[in-house]
Length: 240
Image (cartoon, rainbow, N blue to C red; front, side):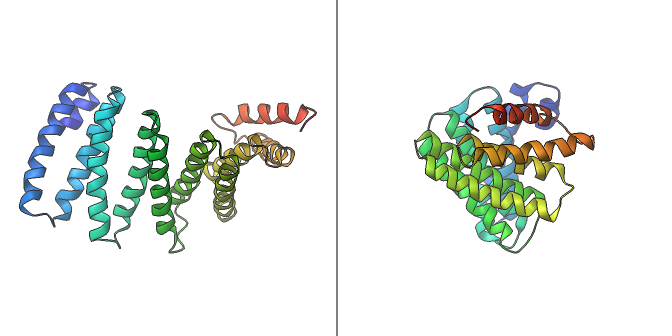
């Protein structure tokens, strides 16, 4: 019923249902801690509770729920390391916890979770898989690490992580040159590096050339048109 209430916009009722389900699953796990199905259900329920609490701006309780989900995800990933779904859940949830910690003004803790997410996505990709979600996860994890480092005044560290993100994005785009989502990751990473002062003229020109081509092919979407205009504006400035 929790999902039904949530779809109807009744977050309070959904929360009551999810918490009741969580209590039931907790008791089942106490009786059998090795049950992967119940651990997965616990991960899903705590994640949903965390999402609702975050939507309600109850960030502290949301963090507690996400950490409970993360604990379940870690147990699953440790018990069944060959099950890629558990590894992917772990990677994504570490990133979500990092985002929430950043909103709570806890950048050092957020950095630890972003790096954990990065390690998990690297583990997933180590087998040679080019799954788009994993490549995107790698790019975003590096970008988030870079943002935290920049906020701490470590511009060099931020540039280094953005360059690592760029390497991933370039390889992913080369493997699937028609994938617009991967191209967007590549363009955003080039933009980040340009804004950090890392070869800005060359990077802005790359953005303009790429987006102009997409525009001519009627493939621009979302904020791509805005980025094209902004990159042209940057190139028009004398210091670029």
